[in-house]
Amino acid sequence: MLFSLRRLKKLANLEAFSDQKVIDSLINLGFEVDQITKLNEISGIKFGQILEIRKNPEADNLWICKVQFADKIREIQTTAKNVIENKQVLAFIPGSKSGNTTFLAKKLRGHISEGMLISAAELGFNKHLLNSELDQGVLVFDPIFDLESNPLKVLELDDLILDIKLLWNRPDGNSYLVLANELAAFFKTDFSLINKEISGKFYSELKIINKTDSKIFALEIQKLPKLALVDIFLLLKSQVKIGNLAQNFANFILIYTGQPSYCLQLEKNQQKVELIEQKVKIKYEPDTISSYHFLNQEKKPLLIPEFSDQIIMENNSFFLIMPKFNLLKVKQIKQFLKKNSLKLTQLGKNYNYGTTFIALSFLNFFLEDQKIDFSWPINFDKSLISKKTFLDLNYNELKEILGLELSQEDISKTNLILEKIGYNFDNTSFSPLFIGLILNFLLIMRLIF
Image (cartoon, rainbow, N blue to C red; front, side, top):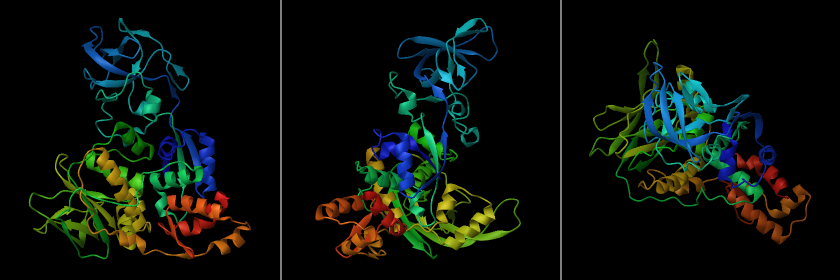
């Protein structure tokens, strides 16, 4: 999976540490950093706000934009047709650089242009992953940024993209929060985005009638969140195609927590959903395959995961469905669709209830921050993650394995670090939140000492 180093450092409070030191620590923690790629070779770009737009009378397709920057007003010409007065833009101004190109003021069709407005592709993002809104011209957004601020920092564009290969036993590692949590424990910094408790503002009346061997959890959310531009960029860094609000939200939860999810909306006064397996056929394919169907009270399909998404009305309440589907069934669907998306890949991994718990915990934080009400989890009980695999290993045995003499102070400090990354323990045994942490246990202990 591809990870933004800037976001990992921000989440784990590691801005004081060098990029190389953080990368080295990931390797020490057992993660294989396969490739490191710089997002772009850009410097000197600025936020600007469009004050006025007029057509260049000497050209058919050039518009002259009067743009307010922190230091002065500049006129910049563009062929983009999506520029709007009072909106903000990103711009190369004289002295800015992109690779070996240094931008200068120059005359275009009788008028001086003092730079160039910037598109998403010019920031280093894959054009094929952009939706129509991002690909219709230059980047245009609401005036929410301080013109004095540095876009490379604010939008996390001065970034390194890490291609991290995960071991088979770490399906939970496909997650910004898990990696950031382990980095914070390693560097002994604060990390508070995974709480030990989950809550809600109300109890949902939704009943899920599950006629499959899958596990289905859900959360009722009063309004569809809109991701910030910096989080849209984060999806692009992970090579996730930008879609509608619901798709973007579900994909954001996926890369942040490792939990696949789908958005589902019911008609008013409907509070029952049925999950069944049923044959499905796709256009131009002669064969059919048995797949999951979410049905409403009239037995009509609302959602067929990976085959058809439901259109979600953004100002109405909806349900975030968090499944744990049968692994063999997911493999069959993946082969049938000839599809290798991040979501299908994660659905095919044996992630456990700890991943769902992290998703619910993060959603508590994220939705409260956006001032959006949400329900207590549906079908999920914290007792699910108390049924864990235990590692029978007391501290006396650990001393012998490590070849170290551990004082009571060492043990107390170690307990605090282990708690941060998902270990629960008593005097005789250790229990990890994630199954994969069992095999990482001794490696982590050696790193601590």
